[in-house]
Image (cartoon, rainbow over all chains, first blue to last red; front, side, top):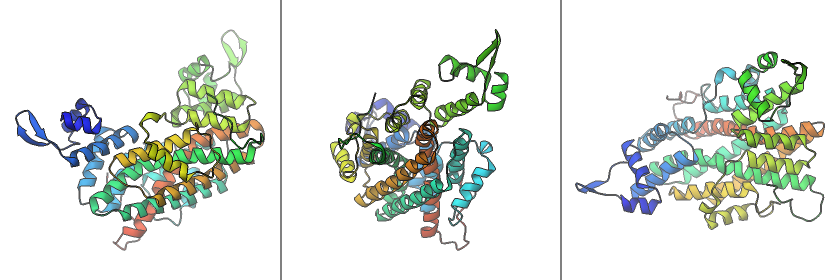
Length: 212
Length: 212
C-alpha cells in the first residue's frame, strides 16, 4: 500500500478510506500484513480522485458511478447515472413554470426524458437570472443550446472512439465531470478574447493585466 | 426590513449579515428603529443571492464583484474580476506543462493574458483527464474551444444589448456565474438527446426513464 500511495501521490489514509467505503477493491493478500496492488488499482484510484476532488462527488455518489462503470448496464444508463451524480441538486419547486417552458421550447426537438436533470438545471439558472432583475434574450439561450449540442456530439464521438465497454463507460463518467471544467475554462478565455477584441482601445495588442 | 425580507423571501438575519458585511447599503433611517428600503435594495439583494447561493462565492468575493459593478472600471476589467471570483482556485503547480501547451495551441489566435484564469482552469482539467488514464483527442478539445467561442460571443452580445453601464456590468457578473449553470444543464440534456439518437434501440421514441 505504501508503494500504491507513492505511485499515486495519494496518502495511505485516503486509500484506506476508499477501501473501507468499497470504492477500491482489496489487493491480493500475500501475508497477514501485505497485499499486492496492481496497475488497475492505480488507475481506479486516479479515477476516484477525479470524481471526488474535481467533481466534488460524495463518496456514496462516487461509489454509485463506479458501480455503473463496472456493471454491464447500457451506456445510455451509465450516462444518466454519471449526470445525476455530477449535478448539483436544484430545488425543483423554486423553478418558475415560465422558465421551464422556455427551456422546453428551446429543446423541443431533442429526445429528453421529462425527469432528466439537465432540463431542470438549465431552467433553475434561468429563474435565478430573471430574479436578479436582468433579462436574457431568446437569442442568447438559442446560441447556448446550439453550443451545448455541438459539445454533446463531441462528447459522444469521444466515447465512441474508446475501445471496450469499460473505457467507454469511464470516458462517459470522466467526460461528464471534467467536461464542465474544460468548457468553463475555455469560455473564460474566450470571453477575454472577445471582450478584448470589442473593447480594448489601448492598441498595445495585449489585454490588460488581471488586477488582483 | 421586515418588508424587504418578505418581498425578497430572504430571512432578516441574512439581510442583516449582508448589511454588516457591506454588501448591501443601509436604508435611509426614518426613526431610531426604522429604515426605508427601496427597489434598488431588493434588486441588489437578489443579485447577492445569485452570487452567494448559485455562484458559491464567499461574502468577501461577492463584495469585490459588487464593488466592480458600482465602480466606473472599464467593462473588460469588470469581466476579469467576475471571472476570478466565480472560478474555483486551481493549483497551478499541479498542471502539466504539456497540458498548458495543448490549451495554448488551441487558443493561439485568441488575445488572452498569460495570467488569465481560463487558460489554467482548462489545462488543469486536461491534466486530471490524462491522469485518470483516459485519452481525450485533439478533435474533442477543438470542438470545445469552438463552442466556447460561440458562447462567449453570445455573452458579449447580451452585455452589449443592455442599456447603461450598471446593467451591462451586472450582466457581465450574472452571466459569468449563471452561464456555467445554463450551459451545464443544456449539455446534459443534449447528451441525453445525442446518446438516445445513437444508442437507443427500443424503438419507443422515448429515452429510458432515469434510474434512481
